[in-house]
Image 1 (cartoon, rainbow, N blue to C red):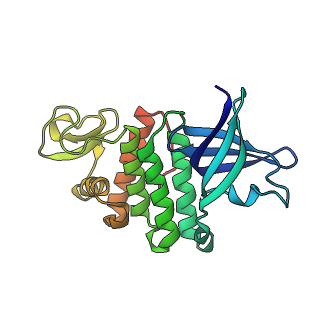
Image 2 (spheres, rainbow, N blue to C red):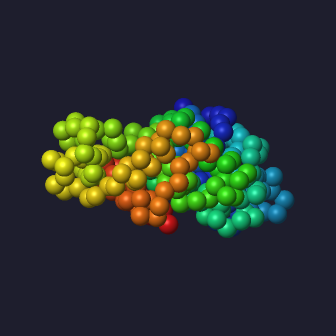
Length: 238
């Protein structure tokens, strides 16, 4: 029903609209993806503009009418993540994280684990620029796949259930494969396999390290899993 509601949100993207408005792509803990318009947000004296920058975590009051976009009527900052803009690497990783959420989680179904994961990622990058590594970005993506229901099988062969000699990865099967089921798979070395398992099991602040070759294999496994099962194509993590 149309009316006003309150929610927290992360601003995934902000687009100029008309003479002074902004259209926002938001991710919320209780409404999933929400599209909204902030009227007059680009005017110099607007109380909304500075609080609705991309990457910001905000507390909003919005009005839901009969159109596709809600209208932001009030905005308060929870965490602006201002320090991100002081360093190129964490800023790029934060933008990448928001873009991944934008592309993968496009429904209005709530996904609080995904929301909490995104908030933790932005806060960590904001407080620790050294966290802006390739391994960290891949660990975030792995955890997001789990929250979205697309995490690959890593404990046993996704085709037959075998638990030993797991040296391949099949995007279509949805995980690692054994020697007997490796048709259609690509090689996934032990280091890459271990990295993916540890990235899933450890907190974001304790991401394991791995060689460039292992990270490239892990990146391919995650990207092709999403392409096959979620029909989403993401930029590879460089």
